[in-house]
Length: 192
Image (tube, rainbow, N blue to C red; front, top):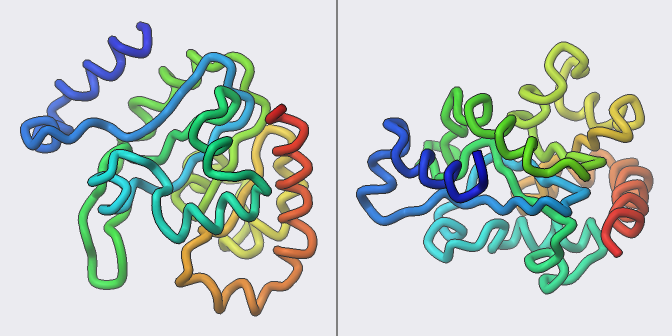
C-alpha cells in the first residue's frame, strides 16, 4: 500500500470517522528518505488546528534540543513525524488525553515499511517508549531515559519537551548534560 492509499484508509477507518466528518486530516509526515523518526504522543489542539505538528512551545524546545531550525525540522526529507495517534485526542483534567489504544499498532508498521532508510526513532514520552521498548523499558520514564545508551542506535528515549517538564529538567541535570549532546550528534549525522 502506498502513502496515499494509507492516508485514505485512515480517513475511512471507523476509529477516525468523527475526525474525517469534521474535515480533520491525520497529522504525520513520512518520507522514503527519512533517517530519523520522531514519535511523540499525539498532536495538541494547536497543532491539529494549524495542521502543523509540534507547532507549539514543546516543538520550540524539541528543535532547540535537536539543534535545528524550523525550516529544517519541517522541510528536511530526512525527518519523519509519526506520533502515537495522528489526531488530537481531547483535553483531560491535567492535560491532553492519551493517544487512542490500537492506533499506533494499526498504522505505524505500514508507515515504517515506506521508510527503509530509518536509523533512529526518537521516543518522546512514556506512550511511545511503552509501545516501542516494551519489556526492555526501565521501571519508569526517568530511568528509561537515563539508560538511553541501552537502546541506541535504533531508539533514543526522551522526556517530553513540554514547558510543564521544567521541574523534571531541573531535578535531572544529566539529561541536558548527556542526552542532549547525544541527540544533537545523531541529528548532525543523520540530517545533512
